[in-house]
Image 1 (cartoon, one colour):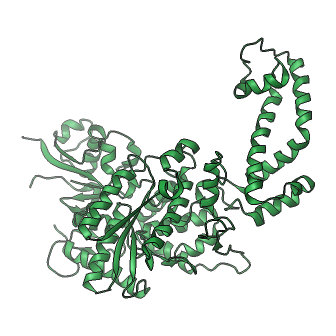
Image 2: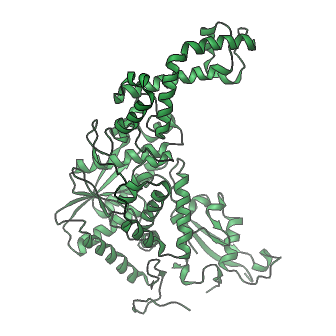
Image 3: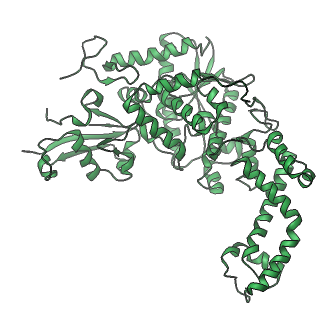
Length: 457
Length: 97
């Protein structure tokens, strides 16, 4: 027996709304869906008449629905907005090249101007090239940090008042959860804001903040909107994936939990004594940053210097590098002596052939030249890593003006200083390196979301 | 066609990636009793169909498709283009109209 539309139009219901539990027919669902977004926009005063607004378009379901709905509402309620599409080409073959075709389709369908900015043009590197350097472990950090800044740059070029992003209610609830799980209070505070942006930056607004992912997918499906749904070819963020799965499990039992988590995030008070980083301008690129040098600049510097891991990881890694640097300063000669002694002890002579000791494969030549025809296994590695950390450290010291002598004289205080004041390490308390990416942009566009897919019989 | 059941199965929104990227499948289900000889099943329900899909159409990563007896949370299911939340979920009987 068919369920009737709760709006009383007499038609059969086609879906159950997760937010309210109402059963609605297609037409009444469109009406409710669009009107709610209109209400969100007007209540939060996201736009002013005459504004130019860039829609951050990835070609995915959220930004496609956002573009469609904003165009509809702009006409229906006469917002007087000049809407345009802004896309970022990360340079991911097999993923972004295809999705950009979808964005071009959006441009034609919705008759909006489209601006595409590429990582290659902005930073000189495509994500494919970055992954070739860094591997697949931390690439989402680069992608997230670069995309966030690329959107700012694109918006500045387009001279728009604000950037509208397709973050939906599920995304925001997930980000609240992620920030709780990381203890990231600064982001927990701002991640539920419907409009973000401090002075001097172009604000970002989230008109779909209270819109459930399920409804976005159903809307796109019933309206037959063309959107792109392929996973990013690079590995997604596992930690976020767990948070996502947890949320979906909870949502199944109690769909209102999404709204409740957002509400909790919005109303949560942060103790006054919790110190939060202040936003300022990056001394290098002049874009907004929470540090003296912004994350994008640090990552880019690392790439260009052939040290892609610079800027990845915890401050303790940098501390370790400093410690090793100091220790190795004094002990290099000692180490060489030890190597020689050890070699004689082990009698590990390579006899003109490549040494077969496990630990020094990479460095045969160097050792041989230093120690004649002898090699050893235990000290070798120490020496090798000492050289690497020296190079890394020199770069760090050069780039961020950490006085070299201080390190030698007073190790502890200089380490403290370096992490507090020089800030080459951005997220001091974050466990997971991928969390370095900003806010919900961590993998907003690039990591495939397999969980909003639908099946029809 | 005494007992076979012809149905269309569509995958979209990324679900097709688990099925060789093929979005539309037209299939004939064998009699339910034959396909599940050990169970006392007379008619196909969505619950049995999901098992059949897993056995016959799914190409990779079953953990992204099924969780317990149902689909993984987050996967939306439509029956005759309507939300299955209106239709008893996995207990819905598939009938020829």
